[in-house]
Image (cartoon, rainbow, N blue to C red; front, side, top):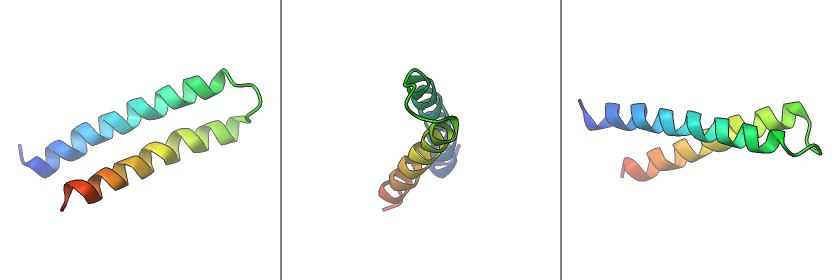
Length: 58
């Protein structure tokens, strides 16, 4: 497997698992709405994946 392909496979799995963890942890907090939970659980892992890609590509 090419290194770039490995990065996207394992980086994607990491982002999905982090998003699920964030979603279920935030679900226990009752002060946040459902839309905020979904937004945070999608955007934070996506941002982290983008930063990791920028670091990895150098």
